[in-house]
Amino acid sequence: MNIIAVEDKPASESEEKALALKSKVDSLTVVDQASYDAANAINAEAYRLRKAFHEWFDPIDDASKKQRQATIAQGKKIDDPFDYVIKVTGSKAAAWMRAEQDKARETKRIAEEAARKAAEDAQIKAAEELQAAGLTNAAEALLDAPVVIPKVVVEAPAKADGVYYTDRYSAEVVDLMTLVKAVAEGKAPISAICANEVYLGQWARMSRGAEAMPGVRVVKTTTQGRKQ
Image 1 (spheres, rainbow, N blue to C red):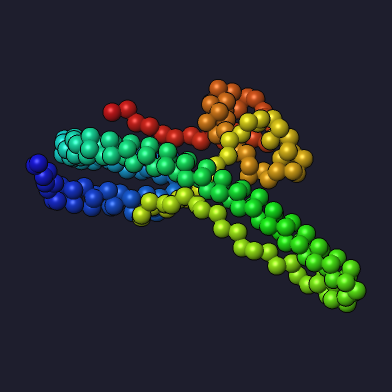
Image 2: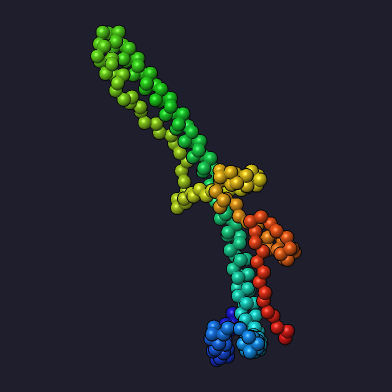
């Protein structure tokens, strides 16, 4: 692969000229015809110098971009299949693992509830037997004592060596109007919705400030171009 070398002298000279013009602009204020003409003289010079720089720089930049694009394309041919395999196998394995872990948690919950009930029933039965034997104090003490619940162990699926699982949560709007109403009523934060700046920009350009929209202000910015 060839490495494209960029001469430093033309770039340095162009940078010096650009910075010199920039220093002039920083101290320039357009207040009358003379300062307006001065601003446009600097403007024209900037156009000229930029054009001259890009006539030298663009062929080098284009060659560099093509070289970089070829390198990226070469890498993608190898990375894409690997990325696909990693993503698909990881997704399938993670879905199964989470489902099995959920099953194990539910099985454990049910087993713990059953163990708790069995322990409570056994404690009550023992207290009743003590009471029947005339050992009232012992029966009351037994009922006041905490229930001893045997530890429940449920076998969980074994994770592969070196893997870990991360739960990521995202949201999708299923009813925009309901969300908008919730924001208006203070039931949801205003940050839950955002203005569609692309649409608003198109609307502003189409209406050219002749129309109004609640909560929106049309901003008019005038720029100057130059025929070349």
